[in-house]
Figure 1 (spheres, rainbow, N blue to C red):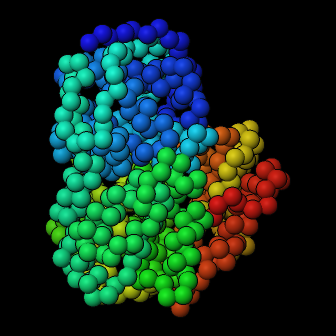
Figure 2 (figure 1 turned 90 degrees about the vertical axis):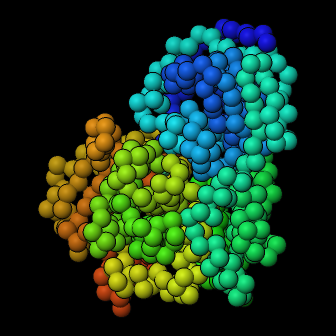
Figure 3 (figure 1 turned 120 degrees about the vertical axis):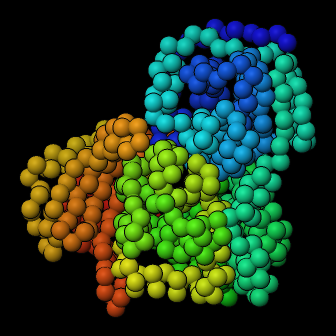
Length: 543
Ligand code: G1P
Ligand code: ZN
């Protein structure tokens, strides 16, 4: 096999964000762009010759081409074997599962998660380490530094590898093993949840819909829900993965998963609805005409974890990202287990899980998961809810209402302002932060400011510090306003405004979140001059 060393010039914009490097497809298609980043990863991770790598992606446009490039580069960089999902497909949680199950050196996942795909859409790439989780910042920063100095990359001259059939082929000295992308993951799910109870529930007439949004979870949903759990054909909708996700925006929330929302809020709605995103790590949970916020979902799962066989022994602890509501904290307190507050991004949960300090983790951004893998996991959350529904016999709505009655309700919402000019978004943040010295003690209507800060996190395991993680304004009654800039966008800036209030009284809990939060929303706008500075009357997305 002929190995070429291709001269290249460094890029200065290959800085991984909240979850890997994400750019427009056209950027990745530019000469050497993908190759340089992959070589930077290989140079930094220091895999011993002969190591095994996992490779797969969410099937979006450019997935196939990128897989072939990476295979040839892996061969040229001394890897002994690559486990690649059939047709280059692996959902993000499935990739994490495969890395852990086969004890590989690490894995490369091709995905821009919920960002739209297609030739004009986004592409992304990220490296996961041997624990199955996203590389920590010290690795992603080293990769970025390397990419700014990289002057050549190595690639094998070889024909493309056929990826449509399970089995092993050779690429020079390297083996390429094409694996079933679903089987290992589905087996893991079956080991965690009471599939017998869920099967009986469905047999008894319980109706559900799962919206795969034309993204990667179609085949996973069909195998697990329709084959292994016996749900009727058609339970999985939009189940054909498409390179442009059917021109949709595969983000499971009330705005983008509108087809499912119409079904669940329509006549004769099923008992349960769920959706997952582009790469299968996010989830949205719906009951009949009922939306479960991701923050509440984490808390409900934590409170009912013992109902699932894989969690019957109890939880070591829970963790949530800073902007996620404190609903899980209340459950943890009652269970007598620790609750950790981390910066946004799943990578911050890895150390806690590896150290055995937490079992469940969650983010308000429709991400929930556990230490069964080191990624958030959409179908896992769906199955956890089905397990709880099967064991309690209650409806989604009843489970949540009872939960609120017991623990109080953390009323929650996030307002996103997408596609802002970067300087405008930065100006809003600076303006808010500039008031921090004067805010504590000030009263705004019924709310009195208790503290404000720019969230900084010291990892309790390795002592690493992540600063500048979001502006928090906390009030005496536990309510909160958070301003944060997104780290996953590819165009301009996205400003996220997170709002949270607490309602302990069951008689006042069944209210519309936007109405209940109106006071806080007003304070947030006053403090930030959001409308004046952005010229936006409304958020782009409310979740
Ligand atoms: C967003 C979410 C964050 C999540 C990430 C990757 O990041 O807010 O919780 O971990 O996507 O799915 P952001 O764009 O806010 O940086
Ligand atoms: Zn995702």
